[in-house]
Length: 250
Image 1: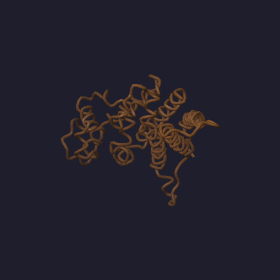
Image 2: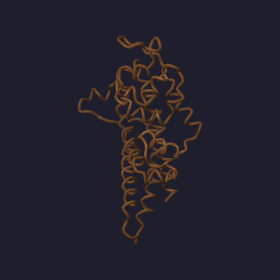
Image 3: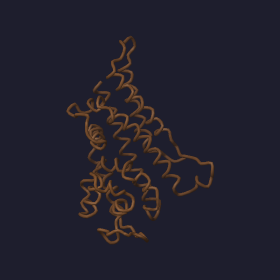
Image 4: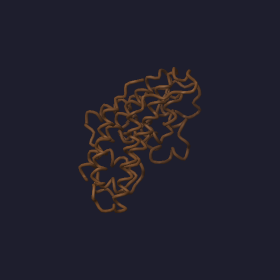
C-alpha cells in the first residue's frame, strides 16, 4: 500500500457533490425536469468515479512478479488518473453543469476548451499551478538519448517532448491544434502554450497515456512518478474546486 495524497482532496470533492445531490433531490420536491435530471446524472457519475479514485490503494496482479515491478506504482496511479478523468468528463461534457461554473460559456467547443472552463472555475492557487507547471515543463524538456530516432530532431539529443511528438503522435494528429503546440514548444523552447489544463488533457489524449509508462521515459521510474503524481494532484484539486463552485451555484 502506498500513501495517496489525493485522498483528502477527493474526499472533500465527494462531500461537495453529496450536498449538491441533496439540494437537487429534496424530500417532497416535484418531479425533476429533464435539465435538472441531466445535472443529477453528471454529478452522480462524477461522485462515483471520484470515490473509486479516492479509495484506490494499488493494483494487484495474478502474476505476483508484476507487483514488484518498478512500473507497478505507475500503473496504479495512471488508473487513478483515469478514474478522475472520467469524473471530470462527466462534468465538463454537460453544458448545464458548465453553465453553473461559468454563466458566460456557450457550452460548445472542443473537449480541451470545455475542460478549461472546469479548470478556470476551480480556481487553483497561483502557487500550486506554477509549481505543477514547472515540474511538468522540466520533464518534457529533458534530453532523451534514444538509440533509434529516424526523424529530423529539433534539438540534439531530442527532448522528451520531441520523442512524444515524432515517435508516438500519429501524423494526422501532429497537424492538429495540440500537435502544433507540441512542435512549437519543442522548436522555440517556450512552453507557455503547454499550460496546466493542456498538460492534464495531454496526459489523457496525446498518446502520452501509454507513452508515459513505456520506455520513452528512459531512465529511472522517478520521472514518470513525478509526472503522474503532479497531474493527479492538479486534477484532484480541479475536481474539488469545481464541485465547490457547483454547490454554491445550486
